[in-house]
Length: 88
Image (tube, rainbow, N blue to C red; front, side, top):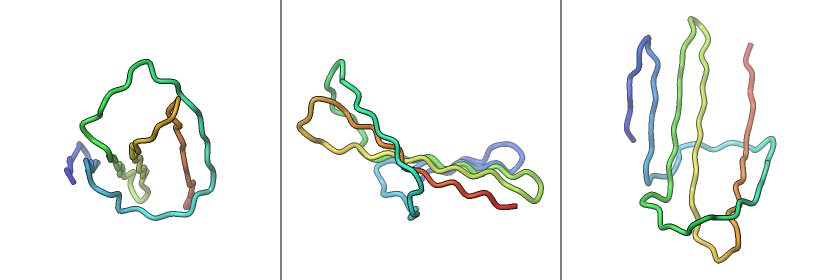
């Protein structure tokens, strides 16, 4: 993991080729098939980025991750799994 301290206590963590340290129950899923223009071999298979941005006593938080899985298919399936929690 690589950590970056931004201005005003804002923090970003980046994971490359590591499993994500996040477990959650999915509340919604969206999928789409994308046809490739060119087939390449990516240098990384797993990546994630995590943001933590405080606003006084509150904070915005986001975690986005991706894993490339090799498969013999005609298109790339992009699937988004999300959970939304609002604390007041």
